[in-house]
Image (tube, rainbow, N blue to C red; front, side, top):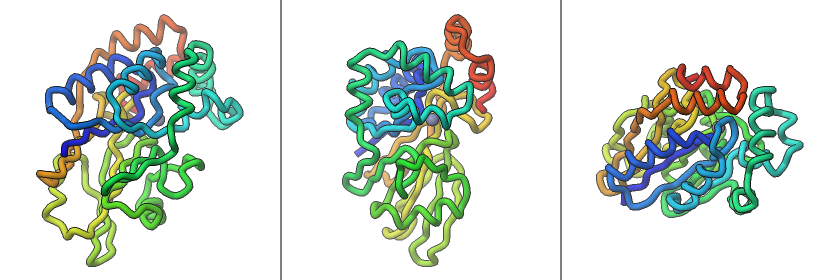
Length: 246
Ligand code: ZN
């Protein structure tokens, strides 16, 4: 079984289209999405339609929740709030209904999907240190937990023999070489707004036959996307960060 896992699209249609084309070339059995389909970018309705069509399971992100729970926007910074208010105005009823239908997490076979953290995902905490990861491992039971939210791809693995945590850089990882009871928390990075100083879209393919997971980076038409954002009058910070990957 080959599963592509994508996250944090943020209404960036140019990036999502490029990633879906890349996934198609690599022939997968299914696609999972970890949320934040909307927020920041110029094409929320179109991105929701593509996710509805191609993702067999999608969990909700904080930017997806905030469009129908406006009180939550009070916690957002000014730039994110401007984008969310604009998104709220142009979302169609079908888009609202789809976002509202999404669950906060999902578990099947040996995989857990959640946008932010296995521990109380409604808090929208970030996993950005080994301590954060150590705290969260007991809150999922599967071998793999795929997350997004920080927009920074990476692997944290818990070795069962030593109970030690290890960080592995994104790339191709052969988990078949480890003991069967090792467990993984894997951030797949962001399609629409990468923040690891690499502006190319990030996603991952889990191959349970080869026993690998592989990160991929995809180039897309950043200039066209930035032009659209400029024409919509989006805050310059949100436009500039796209080319810088931050
Ligand atoms: Zn996000």
